[in-house]
Length: 128
Image (cartoon, rainbow, N blue to C red; front, side, top):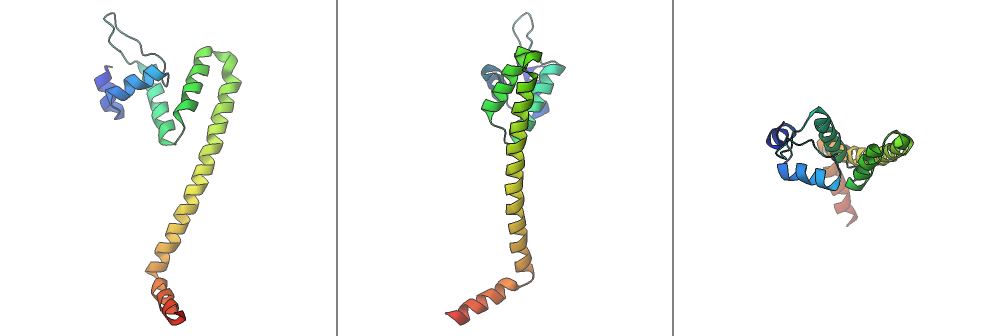
């Protein structure tokens, strides 16, 4: 696939794809004899992974480290697993924080829907 096709397929700009490759976020993309990027299935899998991880809030530095370890071979499997476990823990904490925020918003909305905010305002006016 060309960079334009991959860009459309994954909704990522061509500049972003080039940048990801340049900084090592994805392994080097195979090129034609004329030097044009030819994204293969493996390249696309890396793009999907990085897009998913970035959407989850995983830092670029951690992903670059993961790719660098991957490129070093099987001797880095434990290090890669450790990195992924660490990122999973961070993501779980963020999800817990987001769930708390969502619960709080739902409570607030529920209070409005039940008219309790009006009652609170009445009580405040009585205290003043």
